[in-house]
Each structure stands twice: as C-alpha cells, then as structure tokens.
Image 1 (cartoon, rainbow, N blue to C red):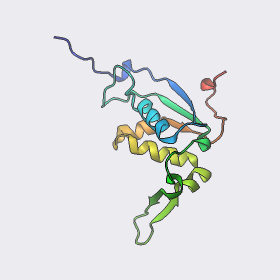
Image 2 (image 1 turned 90 degrees about the vertical axis):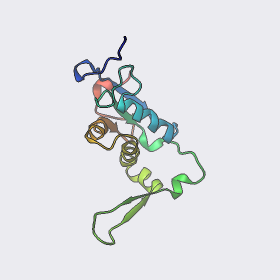
Image 3 (image 1 turned 180 degrees about the horizontal axis):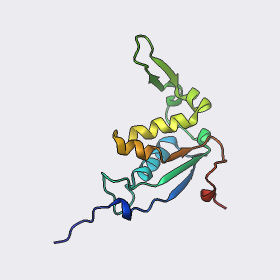
Length: 140
C-alpha cells in the first residue's frame, strides 16, 4: 500500500516570492498570497506544518479594486474593549494612509486562526512603494 509522505520541518524549503501589486486586482492577488503563505501550492503540503514561503509585496498602494463602490463603502472596525470605543475606518482611507495594514488584515482573514497562522502571517512583508530592504529578492 502507498502512503502520502507527511512533511516535516526539516524537509521544507522556504523561498522568497516578490509580487508587484501595481495594476493587479486586490482580491485575486490576496488569494495568491495566502496560498503561498500556507504552502498549499506545494506537493508536500501538510496542514499542521508551516510549508509556506516568504512573500514580499511592493507597490501595495497601487492595487486595483473591482466591484461597484466596494472601496468607498467597506469599513474596518476596531474595538478596545471599553464601552463606546468602536472605531471604524473606510477601505479607501486605509489604502491611502496605511496600505500595509489593509493587506495584513486581508491576509489574516484567509489564514488559520491559530499559532501557526500567526507564524505564517509574519512571513508577509508589504511595502507601499517600489523599494524594499530585502536585497536578495531584488529582481534584476
């Protein structure tokens, strides 16, 4: 009988993937990013092991949003735990002021809500402009 090999941390090879967000649709790009972070695109994917790659996103502020008015209507809420402390920010404002936070919030929603998901989210590096400090990943 043949068995599927279970991946162990020693046999995982983590790569660095550079994604340019300029002109790409936000939602489709985020599903691609989440797939790479979890490692679901690899043949040895194991749900309880961090098989994913590091992802560097540049030009995050130039992502394209499709849909009738989604960018103007969608709101993100935060609450400190105290009465009356609910704050909301529109997606458009978040894209202009802090696109890194918008990408992180979206990726966090697609990853598991466990310690493993938090570890995978730390491998996502987002930059609003074209420059990034990861010198080994600069394409020539």
